[in-house]
Amino acid sequence: MLVKDAMTKDPYAIDPEAPLGSAVDVMRTNNLRHLPVVDEAGQLMGIVTDRDLRHAALAPAIGEYLSASGQRRLRQLAETLDDLKVRDVMTWVVVTTHPDAPLGHAALIMSERRVGSLPVLDAGRLVGILTERDVLRVLSREGSVRHFDPEGFLW
Image (cartoon, rainbow, N blue to C red; front, top):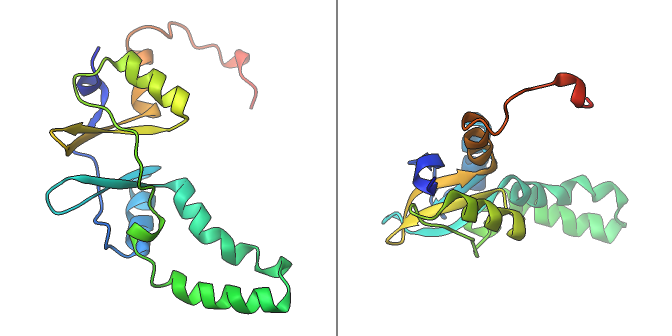
């Protein structure tokens, strides 16, 4: 099977100049963990992940543990956070794949590089995204998971 058979086609994407709050809204509303960042021509520039957003939001959460001078600096940072753009927090170097790559190869890259998604590019343009969920959906659909035994899981 090829990546193009498993990927999410025409994924949500965002402009690098969009306010960070817009990325949060898109990701929260659509239950996304990975949001590609593209320019006007559809060229991939980066990706915003739920981890990127957590890092951007973490600073205010640690404020109570800082000294008085650290808290003053943190207040200044909080004012700056309101002005953050997607480009300020996105991951710039992105591991990608192409539509005709074997799905197994893409899954191996995701595992080895410890990434939860691969933007799919065709001639430099974003045409899809392959996520862990997409790979798992294919595995379960192809019969790799034949029997579900809820007793075998701890929750």
